[in-house]
Length: 143
Image (cartoon, rainbow, N blue to C red; front, side, top):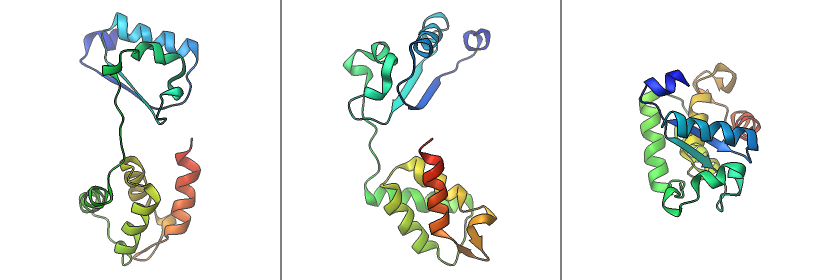
């Protein structure tokens, strides 16, 4: 709490899934005692996943929907992230097409799969093994 009081921090709670009452009390303390902005990201349209945090964001202007990228924006984003990461593969166009399809335009999913593509586990020489990468991504992404 001392560090939050002294610094100019923001706290982002991503993938909020029905947090408990105790967790909500702790977040209320952070927001009140430290004047630290707390952003909660719930992946549900009606905010039901915010659970006991919902009263902290009761004002409608405090809420907005984060939408996935449309296909053109997702493709541009993926290509730029590939370039920044220095990622190369002989099947890069197929890989990008597949992650665009599988991510449904979610930028976090795109980034995650691109990061995974660097690991030797998902590569054979200059070829990315898309199916095993996606299976492992799905197993980890849902947690």
